[in-house]
Image 1 (spheres, rainbow, N blue to C red):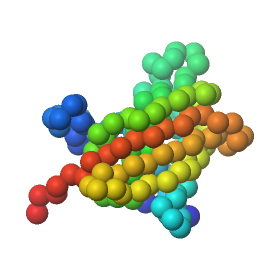
Image 2: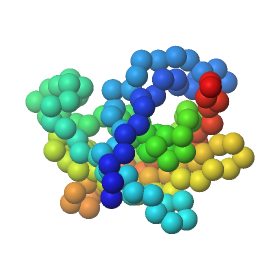
Image 3: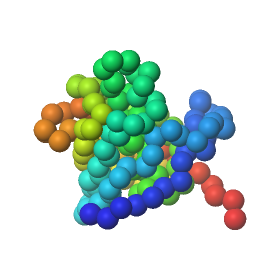
Length: 144
């Protein structure tokens, strides 16, 4: 596997309008490998020093579920380029992710008629299922 970098998200979708937002506090995944037939494997380490963990929850920090969803969107941006989330088709959280956990994301990323569909099964280093996420993203025109 090789390490890849990505630009943070600069827009979010709300209905039919795109709204500017601050850059995502979620860094891109640490490692991403593109496999055959639109499949991928990615990894993210939950860093105990990340400031957002201090308040989520004091005394027992848990990686926020919305950051798991954003991690899947980050994979889509790394694989498909300029895209923004149109819809969260599904997000099911089955176990917490804690500081120090190494999360593996496995799934498929497929382009269809100007949209990108991506799904992920997320497990921790012990093989415990943490979440399943499915997103639809729209292509975003990039200014020259």
